[in-house]
Image (cartoon, rainbow, N blue to C red; front, top):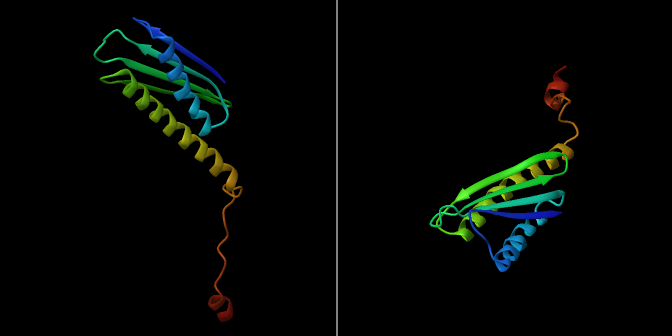
Length: 119
């Protein structure tokens, strides 16, 4: 899995980049088929930094979240939370599809024993 961290209108220290990388790397626990994670930090407005998070997975388009809040870390946490929700929803959708192979078939109702006895 590739992790790319980029910054607009400013600079992040190496320690901050490593901390961001460690936080986003944990998303692979939720969905193991992640191929790349792109984090863009926009520091144009120092009082409200914006974090955009794009996650690519196999056989699926990107999962995207963009959050702006009072500090960088709360923006990052909110963006991660949003993407995690999207990943969980997608994973459950996939698992549900594989769990119920008879979704396309219509089930035929079984007559009750009382109705069968009357005939």
